[in-house]
Image (cartoon, rainbow, N blue to C red):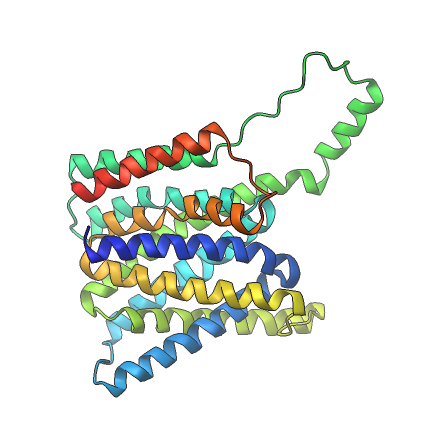
Length: 317
């Protein structure tokens, strides 16, 4: 197993942990505050890394073209993709929201082949399909079956159920699914754009710093506008949200660094599917941190085995 492949798996684990922590953070602080502090902490960590690398002569200023590409990749992934993922996490939970990251390899592979001249071999394509099938099984929700011995509901119950179905809470899963699908698309665009930037200027820390600064600038503007318009508490953080926000930001920082480093040594058609295992890790961390939130099913166990088989196939191709 190459270093790039290991880093891809590490990024998946860190992204999965960040998704679980994000749900706690968003519930306590809201999406805008969570994103602002996430970007601020990420930018501070990347700046410290840049200073440390510069002291050893390991930092070069990227050319304007690479800087623009890093900024565009940050806008797609860090701002749009992550914001929509946080909305999805809040509405449908971390494991299901992380599963939408699984769809990112499909457009990412297309972008990599069409725009980056990467080669998609038949074996690699089948391995990616196997990983996607396994992760779909992992995140498939079993149907809620009513026992046949239950008496039929009366008219009042029917009316109550209809009222609940038309309520805003009932539309939350649909909105969460739409947000998750949107995050998948923007993550795929960001992955391909960052890969192009790394080809021009292979500096993962600088790429992450530029993207984080773009996100910080945008969420500073959004937070200030929200405070002035709606009287929000931005940039204050409730006490209960501080640890999830800080932990999620550090996990996200580690995930992005690992993913960007993996792009230096392996194609995007390999790095992205490995990072997409965050759906699997999100379930594991949910079981560890919130054991009542996820039930182990036959689909989860079977899907885990299929994912492992796909990963072995992908790495051997």
